[in-house]
Image (cartoon, rainbow over all chains, first blue to last red):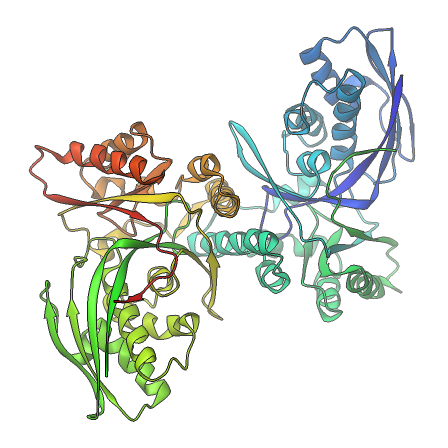
Length: 305
Length: 305
């Protein structure tokens, strides 16, 4: 028995939702094949598309799957094959896709005893290996689809927020390295109270816009006054990329996760395509390679293919 | 020609929405009579229930009405009579009720050229006189009803958020003085980034709960990690009042505006009544006078009576 799944890329933070908000993509993601075996344990059988450890304990999919296996004690083992398409360090939730995919597949192969929301905790164990902290802002949208809010970690409280049907995402992934650790290092322990209030207002506006499909409000709310100003310099040409997306009609744009990918939200597939093209244009001739993605918001997360 | 209106009390901040969120009450508020006169200008004719200045330029209703008159240049004047029932300094938007009522009435008496949302700016001028800052978090819910979010001041961007039908508010107003100025003085210019992130998550959770009528989520989100810890000591017995409301079944509780009133949200009129009673019980025998209110969320704001 085996299952083949699509493990979607995700955009965490989404400008004003630093560390708490994430969204799920539909056209960018890894593929994973998980086979149920009689031999107990979790094994990473093969990884294509990336040079990642096959040692279960050193692999995010391995660690996440093991965490779930230790909970469920199934009378089986699992062989995992991963075809990485989301590059590690892209800011598109590469490790989250593997961690979320692994727990989704294991759960599926033992009869779905846990809900997708209950799986978030186990996927987070993979994230812990990848970044040192058990974040949920990528694994939650990967498992649940749409937008997700991590309202609280203790206890874990994940809120699913629906996306308007016509909301699309444009992504540019410049092929440069921004290490999560470095992106964290520029953050400040103490911040201006006034800026925090502005951030709360924008996030509340974004949530409101998502519920009411108010695209203008979504756009007006997509501002990050806390983190983007500290991280923008880590991404070459960031301000020009962002401006190009906005000039091309995007509702708003910002850093995807901790970068270097930049996302823009747009009303409709065509507008998102224009935004992606405009962002790409900025990097033409700079010597920086890149790839672009245009996607609807994936309403369901991981899919069996 | 004249108009008699009900000017509702309001709860600003609502725990996790410091400075940006407010809600409108239905059973507590002032009454105001505004007469259209041939004599130009704005006059405060009479105030009952409070010792407030009759000088137009020193009265929040007078200042707000004047700001609107200067915009509209109507060929009339206005005589304002105010029956104050919301006490100044209660934390229930007393000055906002007067400012919002004045602009609502003037606008009504000249044929409603402005929308309620457009009136917010003019009502804010009254608030400026009262507190030194042109806040909108009380005047917006007074004018628009329901919950309102001040997403931005420049430009002014007020978002109306619907309340679940069965959401009720319990209020206790201890008759002690907490001056807005003192309540502002305890705030810090710089705060923990981590706490700011928690606040954003809770506000996003509250907004989500309001849209989906998820009472549990509303309750789980009603936490203020930024301001309540700094202000709680200004309100005698605050922690006991809050605990009493929660023990009585309230979804959550916190400081109304800058206090001293304490609000609790509850599912249903009966539960709100119980919460109000439990909060009152705490102040019995302490020598502190108080009054309580139980109200639905007023969906429309100011009403012609």
